[in-house]
Image 1: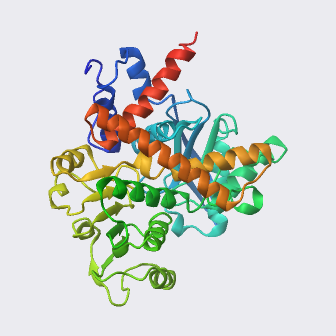
Image 2: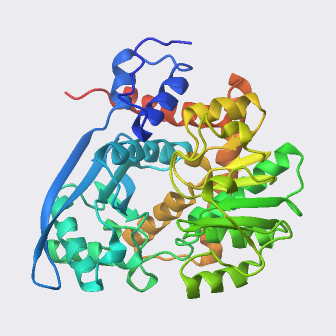
Image 3: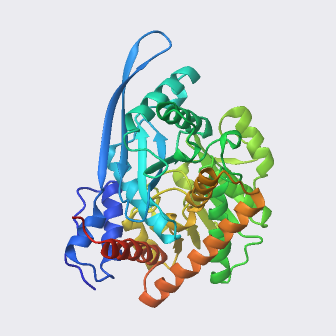
Length: 423
């Protein structure tokens, strides 16, 4: 293994964790120092500060970001987050993860990510639209159906994507539906896009249990995060015969070893705004959920949930990452020592970007597929990618995360060498 040229993480945040993972995988590849450094850092970073007129007539200044990690394989692709705690370092890390996610499943995209420092829940619909349109205007110097294609992420919705598409289209003078994905169906969105990240997690769980000799029917599952992704994972795994014993959101979690009824839980959250207080279930914290005796654990909330401090108390046999970066490098090391298999985020939750690719292609061609076609094509790509990652991991004697990163980094590195360094 070649450890020359390792890039030192600046600190122990998500960016530091992502760089550690990159270095671990890159050590297995004979990369030239310059290529390794080229892949380790973003191509470009944009930070914008922009005014928004509020409903009361006041003006507030908001900060937003858009980071392109790579454009070697094609246009950059990645979501936009609206979150009060987002930082440039976090966006940088998520952009790199998007590069590897696109590469590991064979898509013609590089990685990007964006975000605005805001709590969208405190804004009125009019304020949210004004903020979105102004942010879209600020980053439009990077956006384009052949350059950078945003999508929804934490805190954003299909409606937000519709506003971004419309803003970009107004600037161009004609409708450009392929500039974003995750749009409403009525304006060129793809069937199956909203459920895609959760569906790919369920597919990854299915493939992993087969290879571990586990029966997915009757398997107990704990899902941290009952949002856009976690709720879909819950529904699809329940359809496969799993028993969902616990789930949670930002307010807390609920646990019932006999199982939680998915339909009733969805209705309870719709009415109460949280899963907390679900009848017949015990109240638990998000931290406690991670340590429950479940066959399958799905961390689907946010990054940095399983660390070196609590990984020894995780009792699941299989972890399928629905969130981005929920297990830290320290947590990975402890889980590996204990023989707990982790299906990494860049593989498990790749369904979102896979179907975003389908939506982009449909938008460019103005030729649309049925939901059955979308789901079948995504399943095929997920199974093919899972098998390829497992083969690399087995041949190299590494865990699945490192195997997935080796596959992704090697694909991008080969493209760099074939294209050459300009000028």
